[in-house]
Image 1 (cartoon, rainbow, N blue to C red):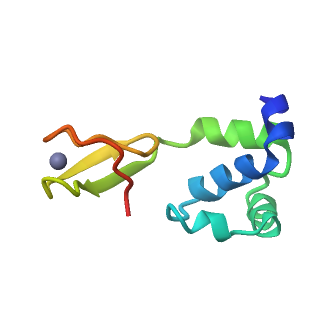
Image 2 (image 1 turned 180 degrees about the horizontal axis):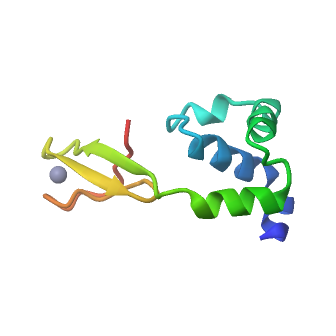
Image 3 (image 1 turned 180 degrees about the vertical axis):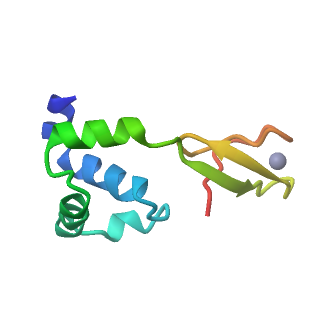
Length: 94
Ligand SMILES: [Zn+2]
């Protein structure tokens, strides 16, 4: 995990930005400085603090509308999701 953080610092910051409720797509526009600011506000400047914080977060929930059958469903975890009605996959929440 530490190794991953070291090798993909940007990836980690984007994940953090997204986990703080930044919409998919928008998080790419957040600067590392901005993410660091969020970390400071939440007391998460150390890796240990971030791991402890992440363990306490509930899984992200998304209300997703299927682009194929246009029915909505509640998805948890990480996108992309698959539609439980028509089985279309690769769906990203808006
Ligand atoms: Zn569908």
